[in-house]
Image 1 (tube, rainbow, N blue to C red):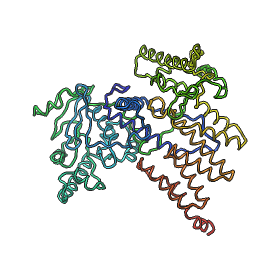
Image 2: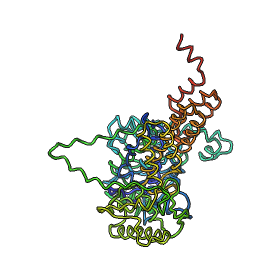
Image 3: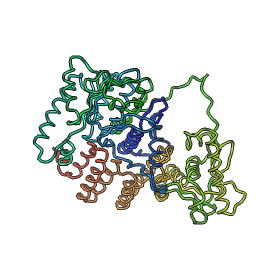
Image 4: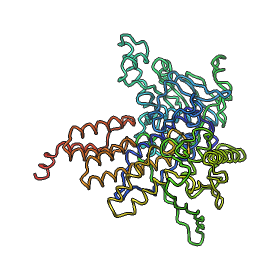
Length: 590
């Protein structure tokens, strides 16, 4: 697949980056704290960078096309647990539209020519996105890391601190000494193994033995030629790969042009040489690398960078603000409208209580979900960019009108309202007609807005209850639209924050069981948010249920295992204080 920069990468690379983006969002949810003033309705989820967005889109498209059952649910939060396992193989490039995949262990190749750095960069990033715990470890001298990634020493060190699979060594000699030491260790393991004849057998017999596949990426140096040759001589036995930026002492040297095409190879054996002929190696730009590395770092738990504030424009050049679109008219009571659209949870369009299960195609349902997010309307071009970003304009317009006609035709037939449009156009903006369709999302957000504006605790409680009942699941659950993910995350956060505030209201009203019920619901919506578990533990301790406190903490530990992290120090200290109140009291009075 091609990136916006013109670089070429494999679909497995897109899968790794897509998963890293998902896990980055899980870390964001884990760290999130609910404002004391109520659900934050203004905060938006930060959009991914252009390269990451393109990779995520390709990943979702590949998953959709790979389903045997078109109605099979798409799992948006558990696609894979990051990091992905490499399964011992690496996708290097493409020939005749087929990806070339080779075993990591024993891969010996040199890269030269104008495309060498870009190919090595893509190989490094691919390994980083497919390097599960103790699965792959990349050794790269600091100077080569700086060359390939165009990062300074501090940025390289910060990346290596968070990404366990990346080992940035002082120089090539240090990396080779590490490989030699590991080779001796692995030889001893094989000699002492009773039944295993190779490293895969040892991994199977003892999964706790860390035996990652070792990949050296670096520039060859004359003084290390003998060490390199010794490491390469048994590379396949000990699951070692050596990729050099230059001539290779034990493998072919591939000359690459700027597009990653193999133009010549030094391999003397004709059979081996044919393996590389006609191959185009994957390659990536430094800008691609920076965007992908950022999401890899945050997927490993590194804090996300603060968004840069937009520069203040001088008064004389300040842009004229866009005209405010017409506000959606107040909706009449839901029972007075002939149709209802549900987008919180599995999408459903119902007329007189009966769901329209057929007749409206997938693109039409996606259009309805997108319009539900924009009650004041949205331009046709915005719809085309969101729903069909990779389709040429003429074909995208045809798809848009086909989807629009689908919706109108089926709703007219089902309701008997032959002359209504259901989706109307005002000032070049398409919007759902609020007088004809009741939308659960609009009612959910209206309840949250009203709850934020009232000073009456009972009214706020009732409104938050209403919002919680309306939130039947993720936005357009079971559908993996690329454009929907930031919106889905924002609404999930609003639902969780509403339930946390609802629990606070119940607790203030001396209703601890109802407070716990609200928090349990919040935990079912977001099982990674530590603040929910903290609230539950505090309430359980107040009720004298210390065993329940321990179980809640263990549940958090188990869920965070998905992210290969432990509960925060804040949560650990809270657990100790709740389980040892007397010690805490004595320490305060001593």
